[in-house]
Length: 577
Image 1 (cartoon, rainbow, N blue to C red):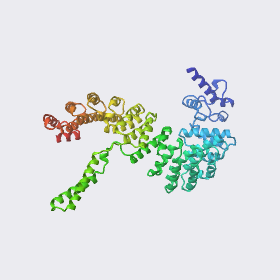
Image 2 (image 1 turned 30 degrees about the vertical axis):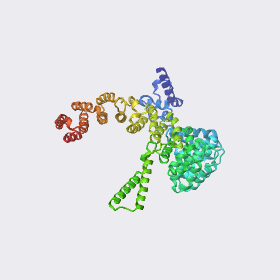
Image 3 (image 1 turned 120 degrees about the horizontal axis):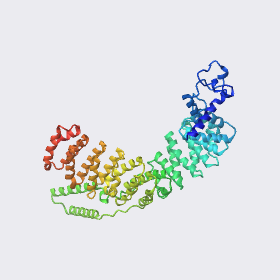
Image 4 (image 1 turned 90 degrees about the horizontal axis):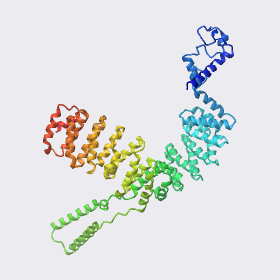
């Protein structure tokens, strides 16, 4: 309100004039030109200027600047420097960190962590912070370790000076302190401490706290990237952690396994059923890691349920045997009549042939492995997850290892993800485009979910057009063509060109509408947009290749465009015709 603004200005002006009033620089009579007012000020009058703020007029732009300095919490009370309070705040924090009172240290650490969370650089306070790692106050210790994890890699030399303290903290009664100490140790990227890190990880693997064991699993990839020669020892540690029964450790150890030794599938054999059963209770990002690993495991260890047994049979060997037997028969025809013993051999060969043909006729029905079914059954509830990455991981698993008649259950959860952020939409639509190219019927009931909206970015429009062209069928083709007719009039040239390409794909896939699409594209040759005309020419050329003799008049009409078309690709299509 205006009244509030006036009161603030009055208070600020009083605060600015207070020093001058206290030294006699301001008299009660306004006409006597108080210090800082008017043009009659004598710069040589030391009494009036010695204690005053400066010699510039209070009112005007400078007055506003001073008031802004008083009102802004992030600036000093100095008026011309404009330096933020943060420049002095670090000094105050440093003094608090070096004080003898735990309350001041704790308050300083809270302010410091808050500044780090806002993205401010506090690395120069590392020496003052690292001294407090020996503090007996647990709350201070926790915050110190949070700070050290952030800056240990940048300040390696100073961190190494406190390494004995970190080793002692590994035996602290508090599990959070033990885990934080291990996290700091693994953050110091110096090869000389590799043996200390390895010893710390091995001790933490047997810790009673699952949180410490989880931190040990996180430290394994860091140590492996620092010294790959430690792989054999790290594999032994991973093998121990894979036997852990807690859900807190499962996701982290699988991540370490995928980083250090993804080829050691034998380590998963013993723990496969346990990982499948723990999957529902693991945290969301652990679920993503485990699902990706189990997908790779299932694709390499189980039979593909969508491949028939006849296709799996070693037909090259059978063909070779048949060719060999045919050649033997031809040789026997060319030769003279064989003896009675030779006749018996030929009879035996014929019997073997009959047995093989009988075996081929009897095809055993596919029976899914129990472990394969266990994986699919335990993954199915995760389709209801609120995490888009988990749903995508389950959809990927079903796409690769589920029977063809069971993959359809992932369609509805994927459609649900399209209501999320645009970044999520882009990833999901890209995967739906891949799925729909192989299984078009799966997404046909959800066709309206892929209709283009005017507010969609271009890349999302292109993905939706790709999906619509994939799922187009006999029942939905007329609805799709009506939608395409609307999209062509869009001001977005790229999406309009993609729409014409989608019309061409639909015309090739569904012969019943080829003629309709062709006539529709011909009508676009008189369109105002050159890009639309050029793309129409290219698509018409592809459609005419299917029935060239039945469209002679259309080819003549296309030839007349040779002088008007300017786009090189369209011109090349006309000349080709």
